[in-house]
Length: 360
Image 1 (cartoon, one colour):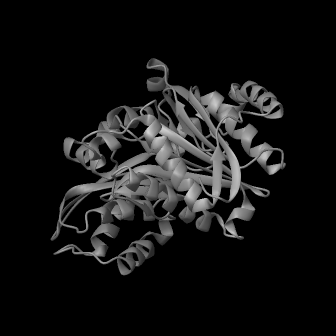
Image 2 (image 1 turned 180 degrees about the vertical axis):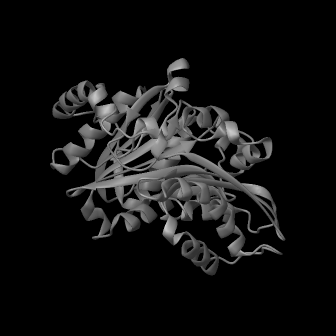
Image 3 (image 1 turned 90 degrees about the vertical axis):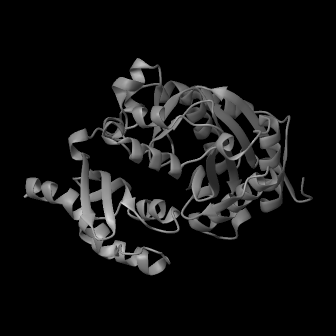
């Protein structure tokens, strides 16, 4: 523990999604109102899928699959994309005053917190590092996704450490076109995401993981987090009220958009550099790429560049696609042999052309 300021450590264990979301609302609101101390919370989820605050369940979630297998559907109080959770992941959350970050914006806050989290994972034996915009990686593969929100003078920043993962179950619960992914593409998906179980001979005990992260946050933020303080009475009451609100269809399905507006599309392009394949979801209303998965038979090093390019193109407007791809390869050194940036542009154009014709 540091010799600086003192905050609170909470470990709320395994909860349902609605309970965890209600805790988010209560702790953030209380910290923003100056009624709660700085807090580090560890949490776990029963099987669930969470959409971001601004997302539509119908566009992001396979409701039939979730209902069949008892996977809870819930909405986050923060933005970002849809996520699948189960007890195999460990969540961590920081509720802090903005004064700890010397006026930094969310990007600066992200870097500082994620670098601290990566330090904690290195103490456990993982060669972890922060990857902008908001991931922590091991050997080029994502092991922790993060995100945050600023409310008044308070910051909520949260992350998920993947201890183990079932990629097929995750893809089935979300509207990822898993049925269109061949074996090679699914193998490629495994290369984008990793877990502690995959990277380590022996996975540390859960308490050891929490201690390493706590110590890293304390050192990186200058705050000592003390256990045993528990929730305040006002927080407990706000959690109870929020559970009632978040259990309602009005909360979960408050954003209503048709899946037709966010179709899946795909393309194949054979070029001098090899075979490129693309699966993609697009937002037709705003004419943007929502998410894309690139695979195939081609040479590109370092291998993580494929994942970085996918992240770079998330939410990219159709009209800026060519420019964005060229900017990416200008900013990243790549060994491509016979492949050129325009090959990727052509791949996306093949997928988008039928949609453009339909829109016209």
